[in-house]
Image 1 (cartoon, rainbow, N blue to C red):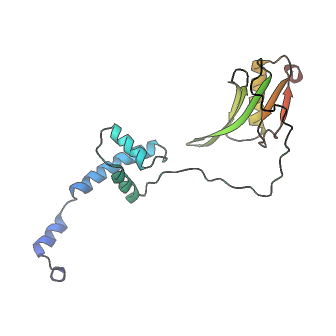
Image 2 (cartoon, rainbow, N blue to C red):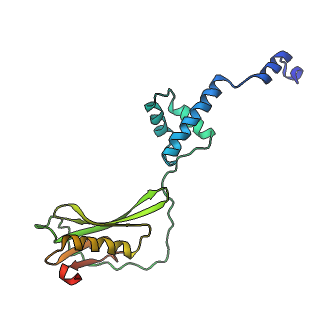
Image 3 (tube, rainbow, N blue to C red):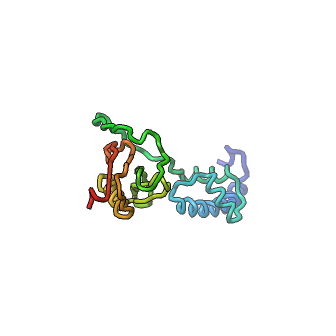
Length: 193
């Protein structure tokens, strides 16, 4: 084989006994640090963010070097969420727009708005329903659950009503989500108690 490749036998045997190069040793050490920051981010950081973290702990490396090491180790950032598409569902009933974009009520407990969002955690998604008083722009009620259903919304509404105890009717406005039914509710403390 040495004759075919036209190299010296002593050079070939020295290459076989050779340890890892300095670059390979440095890359394996850097890979351990990269994996620490990758795991700490929950697998969401790509090479630019991991490079910033490495620079904060005074590691000398380049973004492209970090990207190359991550690619060789099959470390990829988890970007976005896969969502399933529902086809053939019933159209939601759209309520009348009683609010008519009047987002500045003149006193508290006259108009509340509500929506649902989600938070990704290590154990899955947590859903959060909030109720905001448009007068003060403060969150006046909330509810969190691992399931997004009507109980999440009812919990937020009940917390709001029991804490605020409105005297007169309250206009409750939400989006067209299925949990709210795209509805506008008129609530009062007397109607619940």
